[in-house]
Length: 314
Image (cartoon, rainbow, N blue to C red):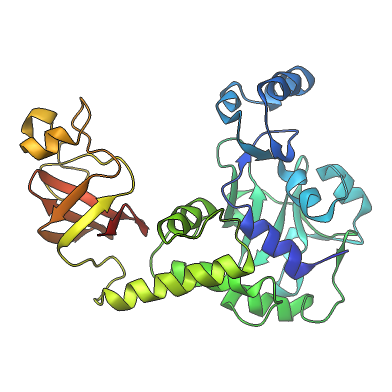
């Protein structure tokens, strides 16, 4: 039986996984998409077809994926060991489920939950106020008694990155550290950063999160400043396609290809967007609305957006 630490570690590792009603943590094929549309109608959005080929899950499936015991949201309510009004929730209930008719998530402390939160939001961490939860449930399929995994001690660990369980603490530590440094701590961004640091096949495991945290701390030490969003002028390689603007910020217009330098034109598409892999020379940097912009010979590009680095030093 899964412990609270294992359940929360699992949920953290799945942040960013696509939501599709009826999916239980597998790759959605086109055949499966049409089967789900036929079976569940409008509960499966037409736009969900764009998620074909992706790992997908629904709200109850996120929990079942961890426990190996298949239940729907109503099934979790019906089999709960305890049910309380959402108004009674406190930090002793970390690892309990938050529930409303037709939907379920996991309370992770600090007034937050993780859930596969519908086709619009996918799997995310959010404040309790983001949904109209009615109940909190002590789940039959989770072991709340094993040492270091239940009640308030887990709450302190998950909220502060302390001594929850061996499986939970690294994930909580890295997300807390990233949040404290103004970074996007979502699974998708952690996976992108892991790839930049050469951590292959990122799945949010204990060792991977320790490696990622060490790399992020080292990067910050090597780029001292008042904010994490600080990079020194120099040569950088783009990790994504980037627009070039006339000034530092999204309020400035994008440049056309004809407005770029000859080298910029050579490394851009027809719209004037610089291509992933292009090496640029950053001549100065400026922080605007918490995001870091860099001036290159062709104009201004965004270097770090919401903590996600779009360049690597070369």
